[in-house]
Length: 376
Image (cartoon, rainbow, N blue to C red):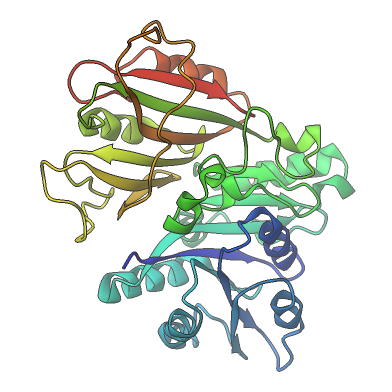
């Protein structure tokens, strides 16, 4: 069974973490099961009551302590309870305001290695621009903590002047680390940026593209919010009656070349003739034998990637009207890769050009053609 992806959301008290999570829920498929593990100080967890009423499948609480310190030993038990009782498609861990992400991320990674039940998808830090604090420390310890931060969400920036937002951005830059960042839209960030692709989302074809399409824009997006990210849709189409594979060597080179300050997320369903390894070298034990064409879910996030074997089907056909081979009597077309690339603002044209020049995403052997569209 595929491991459950875990997303960690942290930030100081009142920064807007719970609002971010609640705004994520309407963007997910109706059948998607999201579980929440919250860490609160004190005896009354008001936020958990709020979250439990918003279509979250299960909630676990770790009270009266910091999850990255004296409660870290209880994390495994809490995750196991959610896994058995809820069987979620994803678990979000929302930490108390003072928790650092490094210790928690390392513990999730340890539990994932030991049990095979979990995989860390990403660590998101929410910053309240109006009342921001906590980034004055540019020491070695602070830099080590931020190495475990994948994405910074600047929240409540609409409530301050541009100068104060720029000051906040500069202070984060003093850490001298490449960390992707986006502005929220009143506490809302696209799920395509926050979440990687998992087996449940892959079954929902629209979710591979983060809810985007050329004809349908995301829910209630303002023009300003859309400009925070740009999204490319990539389809690799093969020709002929025999199953074809993506060239995995070229694909790995592409994944290694993507800088995380330009590319935020890469999500794909891939057809491959042999198991595709994750960035740490792990191979899904349920992968199809070498020589057989198997389907794999690829999730690249902020410089690292995971791969899971899947029976997820790709579309039987795509719009190939622009292809010179799309004539009467032409061979059968089959999509062997369907990918979404979520980029920082201003990067889509450059990366579209690079991909279309070839050598990054291609079919194993000769043949095949790419369809690359900017959808946001």
